[in-house]
Length: 199
Length: 199
View 1 (cartoon, rainbow over the protein chains, first blue to last red):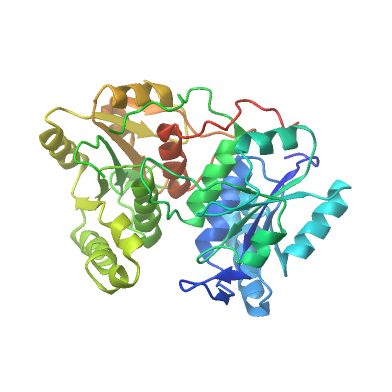
View 2: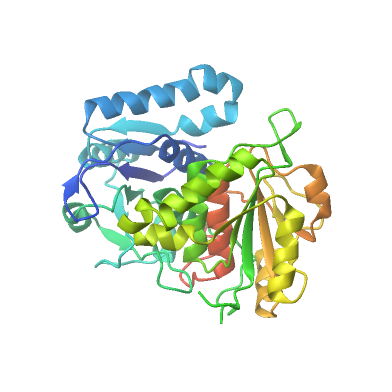
């Protein structure tokens, strides 16, 4: 990992939606920390921001990260320590953006993901070109039933939903983050586009 | 989902390796069931085989699947019922291959994935072409520290490890399965290859 890494990921626990479109704060989960940290480390993410305003949830997340970095977990599994060391816990998206601005010397481009198509949509190719031109990029993911409208409306752009051949697109946030990071890495010379193996 | 779907996924809990390369049976985990079922449903997988010879582990997996398909979980979250209905629990890989042979009228091509490069390596493009030609394909993933050598040696081919810009490739099996299914779907017209945004 180099100091000039420009792609960060944020996992938002507030404000997000519940099943009936109310705004809630979701709980931090152990495997969201691990899986997205491991994918982030694989694909060259700079910082994996875990965003929750709840002090007890922040403490819980911190304990998990500490166990796997400076604690016993990290001593028996250095690869996990390497991955989890990407995590920074913070209060809200504004704090993330301010920290990225400070470390990169410029405002990051904030890009939301969603299982539903949103306005201001861009492609992974667009994001790759922004990164190649030196734009710091923050990719944000919602927990629970997705990012609240106020977050969606505040971002610079959105990535389209991940769809397969059908209309089912209820991926876990762990899967969605992994897939977008893989797509943005562009490291897939062997994949054929649009081979129609589904009838 | 149509009856002619030819791509299946199997998650192997035995025989797999532990941290010190001993052959073990790993435990079924709740989120492996959910995340890979959700990715499987998104990307058009026919059956998600959960492979363990342990009767108690089979019972546990069956209880989880039942809760989310015919039970209370499925009634409040039909999308989850849709995904988890892909799961079939079985004893070993031979049983999976025999069932695929029977339902497809021909032997499936069995392809292993691994975090280490193996012999007999093929590309995602190769697999896409096999699928387009009507070859039933079984994609197998190992839990714990990966598939045992006896499994690796028995398969028809292997897919290369998922790598990013560095040498860290310790993805969760949930992330790896999601990424390979996305790559095989080929549904990514907007991704630019080899945009060098990492310095």
